[in-house]
Length: 312
Image (cartoon, rainbow, N blue to C red):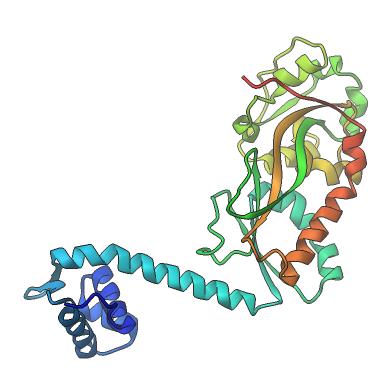
């Protein structure tokens, strides 16, 4: 028995056999013969000085030593594969893979992509719309856009813009409901995605912020913010829209925001990437472009009275 690490090929053969619990399937995965795979595992067992598998008639089972080695071997190869993918990405100066939530992708990124493509025709963008926490090493993702109140110290992170919510509607509806008081008679749309925000920033809180004790309960409810905004764009009613998701529609005149009172969420969208990768050409130009795009609508935020709600 030796404390030296055995050959990587032998460990690779063991990892595949332990995952499949079949020498034949492991050999097929590694594109070697069953005899070659069996030889690698036997050499590993000789190096260890103990068997790793019980060979049964038509199956194999891990021994105590095999069980002890299985998890560490699997994690080791996963780490190596992730590191290799990361190394390969450093050689790719044209492709940029981005993950963002479905609503942010639909309402912020998609309407602006033509402008980015014109300014940077050499960068190929790939998108994965998801709310799941991204592992930027394992998932082969370069940039994540995430909404949160907390920092992400293990990643390069910069805030893009503070998030607030306020009532928005079509210009035609804004003419019908020109005052906060008149909104009591307006068709109300509920964006249930903002329920995750604490302190709560719903219709009850907005009406209280403008001095009206009113709590609407009737109206269509949407679990996705972009769907709620699309309903407002279609003239179905008034929605409490989130800054990043409505600001372009306001700037372009598709939505009206007739009341200057907004509620702060205390959270923001952040631009995230692996530390040390922020200087890669395609990541840097995409980050700078996003910051410039947010600055273009800063005047809308500056025109508002943003109310901070107490933590509960």
